[in-house]
Image (cartoon, rainbow over all chains, first blue to last red; front, side):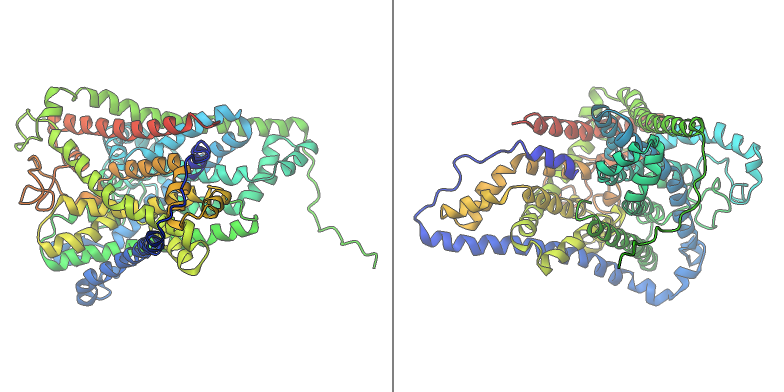
Length: 337
Length: 302
């Protein structure tokens, strides 16, 4: 977004009729501290509100944390009727669907970024890049619907039967477990749709870091007689390596917390850890989304908020790691990242 | 001291024929194109499905009737949900744009590289990655639980929370692009700092600021998760500000939550309404997105 904005900005040009120095001295002297105070206050409000979010989550999940102890983190099933408030099945589903998404999205994003930076005319690159970026503005719920009505039937009728028929189908992790429900609604389907959702983010960051590779370095490679792929693999990717890792982290963080699309597609099986990527399961975010309004007693609500807290901590850790990593890269490349 | 640093030990060069190197190159180029075409066709597939299925639901009733109360009945539209979404989103914008803008001004003009500003910036960056469902839980905890009722306002607060860091960081980025000479000349004219900031710096950056704010609004307009247990949904029209049917007093119908409720129902009529709603959101979000880019990109050379 910021690259677009910087282009947009350049049309702003010089201001006309800018501030006249008015002789109303006292008003001026009051204006400055007031405005400064408002701005500073807003900045601090922002930080306090964000920290407040974490505090509120802890306070509101306290009944569950103190009442259930480590129960939540050591129990598999989520089943309030039998007094089980476990997060493990949901955690497993969250990480498995994210893993599927990353395995699909990262290579795809890299080859697309390669195309955008190295292979096509900048005009073509801009059009293709914009179309891929547009994926980022499709709301999650729409991905969920398209997934449910188009991709689920495709998976159930074509892809899953086909892949299970190949020798791959008997591998652990692919071979259907006891929860198997045809493979339409499954961790895999959720992961595939997640991959499309995070693709634009990973592509955009990868493209930007690949663009930072100095032209001279690449030209030196071409001068030695390298092919495009050799320059890409031995120069661009090496150079942009750490930036791409940052991009992967950003995609990872998004996939972990994605709610609506996953809620539609993952299958809402709350009681078991999926044995196979084609088994249905649940994720923390979708479990909260689907169960929150039905939770009536205080303990269940509090346990759901504790699940939220767990997800919050996980995504924050990934975010901090990504930020720290990208800052390191920024320093190493002289602030051009 | 004539020692030349010894060359780092290198793996012996593997000889590859030109043909095989060129073949590898071609394979990668083809893969890149396949990848890009695949990515674009996903976008095309989503648009195609939503347009084809959604347009069938777009009729007079869709834009004039409220959502059906009785799932069996085949009448009803999405009008109350559309109005509700607009109100909730506008409420979020009213909260987040001024605060986010001022926070961005602080970061760019006052805080700069100070410790406070760096801290705020870091917090904002981290929070931009917080899942929207968590923000929904937060708004539930501070507004719905203590007040004992759902409200459109709680939904606005949740959305505003998502907008705030985005708004602040884009404002900062855009203001940072304004050359310092402009600030200096303004100050040299004897204008106070705040007037220079608002009348010179922000005026110079207004195209970017408007774009940034619009994109921030567009980004939250299609959110569902923060509204699930804040604004909830309702089959009725919003009745005003207060009272059980009002913005502050009770559940407010909105597009995304209604789509979520209807899409999972086995009734074709409700599914059709959900697709119509999805099309409306896509048109709204992509339309504004493209519009604002076109509007403010046109005079780029100027």
